[in-house]
Image 1 (spheres, one colour):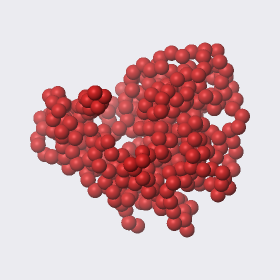
Image 2 (cartoon, one colour):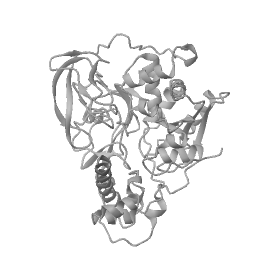
Image 3 (cartoon, one colour):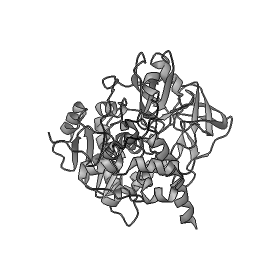
Image 4 (cartoon, one colour):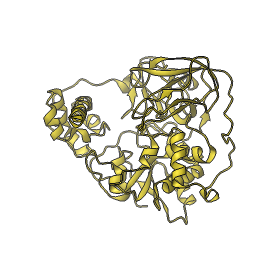
Length: 449
């Protein structure tokens, strides 16, 4: 079996896929569901409910707040308790809608049956109709970035899509939610891919899967046998293969230029496997996005697992489902250990981009003492964007923003490969992210003049 991969950099962190063979089960409903209004890139959603309003599962509770935005739907039935602020995964207090959970009554019109709907059986689904369903259902990128999906399906006139690539790589350590989704809903994912292909008006679709998931590769290859329009691409294990630019390189051998270029500029539209499943449910089952597959994992958890979680469920409740917080000091991450964010409270709710809740022990989370740079160049060797992380980190620490921009700091994808491999344990990524934020703000200010 030929294995593909990206050409520049990459590392091999320990997998720790503790839950790969744990079947997904529904998580219990929360007592109070909390819905942050910023669950996506772009403008926050605007509430369309008020205190005391009754809602059902699937009720629209916040509409898109701009073109780059997405609506939010209730995942529970009950009464709107309040519209207030709460801490989300970023650590900041953000506007949220609080719903007191009372039963589990769903909106009429959502098809809750297991019957598989195929694209061939629905000739009425035009590209415009599919994009309209995706937009109105509030679907965003489910891999963590949270970009509204309908925008990806309507590229600018200067770019022409040639293929859709499904990101089923899941290269981040610990996380297995995408793998379980593929093993349990392969048929629906393939229909979702066909819907995405029709919406994007392309004839070719790819599914990229790393070869540490041989069962998923075999299953999807069996189900696409004889379909010349869809190809399952086995990938060598290398982090960060799930990055959009790295995946495009690995699957179709094209390099996406530096920002503001995006994958569609070289003919590819990349969507997460969870997004493909959500598209199927939205278009074929009239089900807006209000729940997702999430891994809850950690070496010291008694019963780590995979869950189908309603949005708004607090992290702490999911950790309790796995036997509770381990003894001692722990760090809880929204996401995996490479790109996840440490949360300040387990009251943080699951949102559209929450693919994992990872509990790291103090031994795994504690940083080692920083030592002087030994000029080994390892950070340069592993950078998948071909950057010089040691230089970008130094420029950022010295606030030399103009030179940092010249050295292409905005191309950093925040994968953490440089910091992971540094033998001196230097906080390379921390400094680079500081500099990237400053440089992007400068560029934005300059473009507005």
